[in-house]
Length: 414
Image (tube, rainbow, N blue to C red; front, side):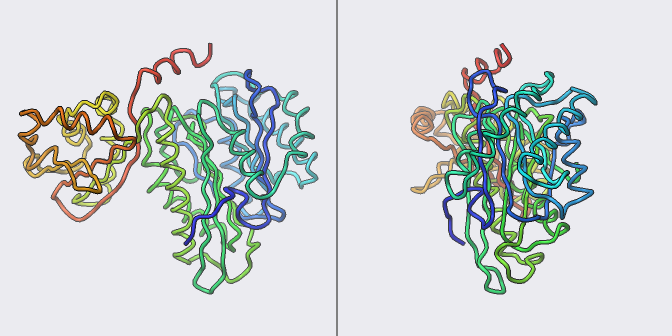
């Protein structure tokens, strides 16, 4: 497997683009599209929030009803189109139909996604007027992916994309690429069949709809569902995976190399989302080992990256290790506190924080100052936690909680 440039347009027979339609008051790009030159199979995972946005309801139905008749993804940023009732659903249908007509596509072949402020109706007229410009902005290669990646951002500070090339078991070389957005309101619990987290993945491998859904759901659980920026689950979390088969070769339905490529791209995007959390100054990576089972390992890792007190301590470079232990204690994972160990992982050697359930003595005798200095220097804070209960492990990603997060969200609408 090799990392390659190009994001969603790295696989064969895909184009993408993005333009400004006036959805965002800032004037930044807010319409994005990813298109396959041919019909593609599609899979999707969506928010489990019971308050679901119109594009989530529509997209889930499309993936379930016609997974082999998709040509692309149409995304709007700046307006979530959530809590808009039947009118919001009709608005989304109107936009999709107009886009399909503008692009010469069959009806019902574009999947919807939206992100932004919850509540307002989507500005249909402005979006429809911008469709000719969007068609003109379509491009292949790095340029197309970059345009689409920019157009789905809201409070994000950078684009998020990744792509890999991999050789399958039959010798066919295929590509998997993706773009994502996510900065705040990030604690997705994506599930079938139903971040804000948005993720759009493409591949030129030949994969059937059922296998595509299986691979996406498995990878989402290990990657996007292990990200926590602020503990809030969005109404709009959506991840799509399209497979157009343009690379040829045999079916990759059961090819482990293909599944590994999808997970690699999604893990890269998940880390980028966590690193770009609203107001974040540090990426927090939590590796849990020695859990009794996978559910316990994931619960423990999620609890630590999701703890407001841990996040605040990381921001302040405060070695308050009791907060980590407390989060593990309420995580639901089975553990014996007297066996617990926590280390700050470093290439030059791990730094012990908790050993046999006790804070290391050096933290009480001047060691805290050295740990604080070390934490201040780190862009990524990697915690290694061992429960000493079994052999299961899991990784979760988050970020620190800074003053800037409150500033951003105290005036998000105003």
